[in-house]
Length: 189
Image (cartoon, rainbow, N blue to C red; front, side):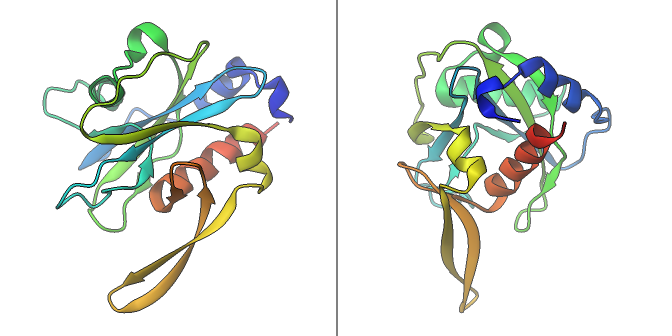
């Protein structure tokens, strides 16, 4: 499949095969927002530096923890996206479906990535939680052209993680795992 023929309806059909009725607890949701264009792109945010935030300064998708007032994880992703970048997914996006839930290694949360598509790039207004926004072309990410390595010292030991290098920062860890789930789904015939 070439990305120049990216078909949101075909991706939605593949995602519909997933059973998303059971929601994990404790849980969070993120919005993987695709721009359906001749050169499809995906939206990343760079989280602002904040003490006590395990994802401080990381490249990520908009999203966060489920609040008691959220009727579902879809509502969590919509609320968080509106708060963080000013994008009303209910009005400007089309929900294609969920990827597999991804457990975190540090917080005990299970995160549900939800894939959305926008037909036109919206005007985005980041709040104080977001330091930068970046639309990244999918083709270079999927082809390996953006592959990198993230180096981290954790508990006194050096570690190396697979990553993607973007203009605004390095995508690694949880978001990197979610991207690979998306890529696997996009490559499925």
